[in-house]
Amino acid sequence: GAGLTVLGLETSCDETAASVVRLSASGAEVLSSVIHSQIDEHAAFGGVVPEIAARSHVEMIDGVARRAMSEAGIDYAALDGVAATAGPGLVGGVMVGLSYGKAVALARGLPLIAVNHLEGHAVSARLGAETTYPFLLLLVSGGHCQLLEVRGIGDMSRLGTTIDDAAGEAFDKIAKAMGLGYPGGPALEKMAASGDGSRFELPRALLGRKDCDFSFSGLKTAASRLAQTCETDQDKADLADAVQKAIARQLAERTERAMLAYAEAHEALHFVVAGGVAANKTIRCTLENLATKHGFSFMAPPMVYCTDNAAMIALAGAERLEKGLTSDIDVAARPRWPL
Ligand code: KG4
Ligand code: ZN
Image 1 (tube, protein in one colour):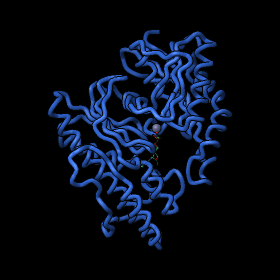
Image 2 (cartoon, protein in one colour):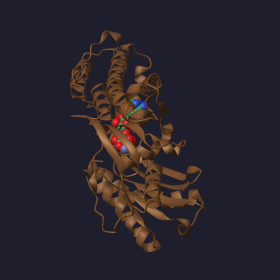
Image 3 (tube, protein in one colour):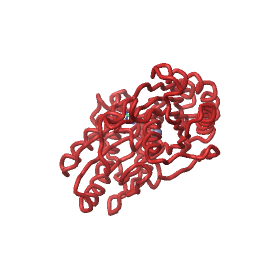
Image 4 (cartoon, protein in one colour):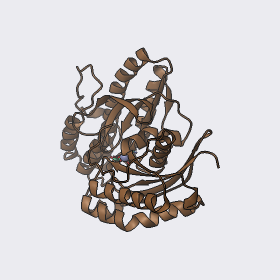
């Protein structure tokens, strides 16, 4: 049929994922999205163990990719391309998905599209509804915390970034110090629901600075120390609420700066939040209110496409393919790859 149909592969962290997406004039349609989470394999270690992750990707990738194809109900002959995350991420894992993608591309005579994982998150809101370029993007995940101006696929510039930890990393490390397990973000959000953090004073970072950068290490240290003083579940819930509010506040303060600058240079004002932390309801809601206040439309991916998935990689691949931006078959995996 009309449009471009792409198989996407994602193996840069602790999910082995494959998805088939069709991009046409009427938007992006997810034909299948299979995610095998390794959470159980890493939970005992309190975080992702790269060696375990890479080995698990090797075991799972073929089955996950075949399932994505069968759930999409199409034959390989119906594909227009194969997209795989080529970085940034844990390089052992990235190599598994990328090598698998190369093999499928070679065997089926299809173009290969190496996708930057961050570019996948950047287009992920389009999996739920049509978004128009350009837009202001807050990308908040376990590894990244950035404000970007997104003009189109492969055409973005960075307005701000974290000078130390990512927001998701702060959630994860504070949750770990509170004994909430891994991954910490969702656990901390749940705990915060029954808490009142008003009795805790947490540091506010980079207060005097006029740029759009973030810093979470001071908050992480202070909250981890406070975690040691928590005696009851109510203490923990109260601290969780304080932490969540502090992270939301910093994200909002920096995003507000970026919105003011963006609004000076653009007529159409669209704001998108994406990445794992965008699954947090308090943060989503805070940012939506901020967008409304400054005359921006607000978009976030459906919950299932906030955290790592392959549909966003397939979509970024399809958008690249549409522009003729394909990759050489010997393209290398990149542990670091800034947008
Ligand atoms: O995008 P993602 O799946 O992986 C990276 O590319 O990093 O994001 C994972 C991060 C983790 O740090 C996780 O704790 C955080 O997103 N996260 C959340 C929530 N769900 C996931 N943080 C806060 N609240 C949530 N509900
Ligand atoms: Zn991610």
